[in-house]
Length: 253
Image (cartoon, rainbow, N blue to C red):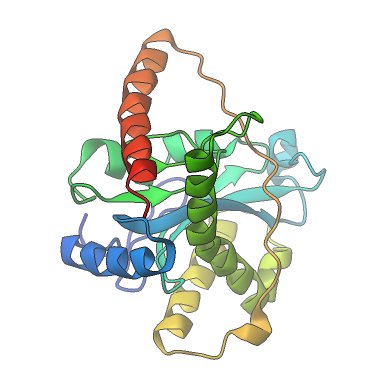
């Protein structure tokens, strides 16, 4: 993907201030994450949040999320400095996180390109699918062993950076608490502009603590797989994620 600014129909933009790290940058980011979490190969943390809007666009009830207010989804990847490395927005608030991911350019980047270096991956919570390039926690069924619990704690600690990033973004740019616009493109442009300005502030080491806001609790946790062939593909992809997660757990010091 080149460095020229561009939008797709659901609001992804890459600029010099929102750009995917190259392989050398990924190595540097992974070193910092490992110092904090003891997990090798982490290049970012993935999460989604709801951006409240003043009303359902076009009266479409899909914009009403499970909490009962109209919103659009914002999906971001944060690095260890709370720089936003990928931002994707525009899907209605009722959309599951996993569906937003599957329809984003991030999914194509992870599944179909060499943009993620070998042995590198993102961290995410259980709302997202387990992949070789997305590592999620072991699902707690009350029977996790000690190693699985330790791994989940390490993952949770490391991925808090994206929650802090979202809290900072919303705390600094209060307009994101409710956008009073009625055209989807205008809403997308406002959200992406805030992400760009966020990165500019982080790059300039702007004082951040007074802006911090508690992140939203994401209500979307499960995705529905409707197509049989897609299900088979997802199971195969998940297997490689299972293997990687098990290896990471076994190698924790």
